Image (cartoon, rainbow, N blue to C red; front, side, top):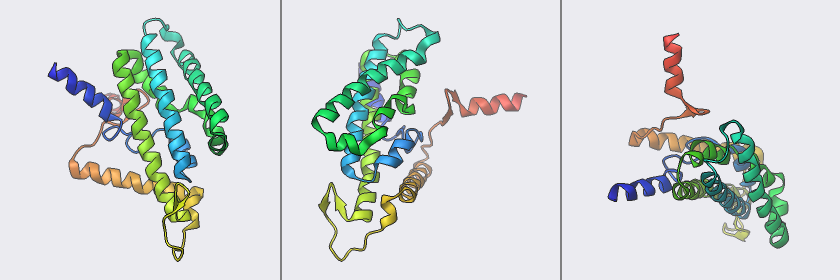
Length: 224
């Protein structure tokens, strides 16, 4: 029983720190760089992303024995698109300003590699409960990352946080932080920080190319 509890906790927390989808696995960077100009945008995208990820993981786990292996990807996209459509309709009806601010990146959640990756690597092979926990953990990890990036960029670029003035009027804002170069700079610094922490804690993760571990590819090359 204790072993099972540890396993559940591990599944939930992996996506937050150990396998953070953005900073550790380097997935979903397109939306991360684009929507982190303001904290409100980051929170909105994080909530929408987490909802879609959790719901699609649960649905795929429920249907994992029904969906033929040859049509995995099309079925996953249809399921994810259904939940994204729900999010779009709700956001358009009740938070239209956020819906407009997120723009094309909201419907592009359908093809977000984090969601598709978790569907293929986890949800289709595990129970509903484990898949839900995985979705929650990955969603929290993604949300924390985009909110952190947006906080840095909004404070330095505009002197505000969630629209409220937090820096003194004498503070000279760094305009580039609200532009694309600022996004890449912020992302690069956070990635460098993660790599530094990995080295200090000796906790490097096994990075993968597609679905195959990098070490397996290297071993295959050595054999050739």
